Length: 111
Length: 96
Image 1 (tube, rainbow over the protein chains, first blue to last red):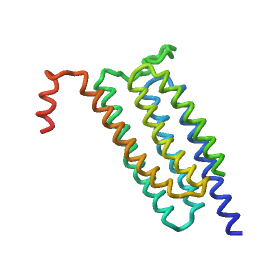
Image 2 (image 1 turned 90 degrees about the horizontal axis):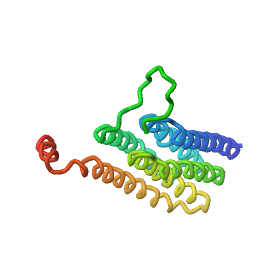
Image 3 (image 1 turned 120 degrees about the vertical axis):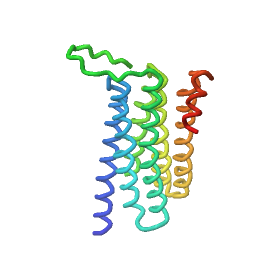
Image 4 (image 1 turned 135 degrees about the horizontal axis):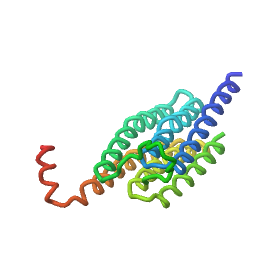
């Protein structure tokens, strides 16, 4: 009984994590602008990673493995916003302008 | 269960790699490779669970550290490497 509940919960988290990973990948490929693509990368780094690792934690139970998974989650939680901030600052500094809404239907991104 | 996770991770890796190869500017490539590093951490962890060898989690943790440091190093190079010494000197004084 407990085993079944644990497996079901784990399946739900892992399937949700995989779904959000693929959503992030498609967004990274299809969004028109560099600064829009950063949102898709954020989906991969936050909810996809966290749901997948949470599902693995439920499978592992209380052990050292769970602690290591928690460390990975914590580390990615700290480094992903830092890297995104540095990337956006570097791109702006390097002459990248965000594509703004102009009212026209020019959907060819600034890239 | 972990097979499903690995399939999702691999599909996402392919999409991200297409963006890295296609990326019209260097920032797109860096963004895609940063995501690829995160996905590699997930792949190593899922593989450890699949093979029932949880020692792989240590490797995943170290890979997360190295991937972050690599991204920051490449960003710093591309942000300041092009500007030359004339504009670098005031920036350095500012940070000191």
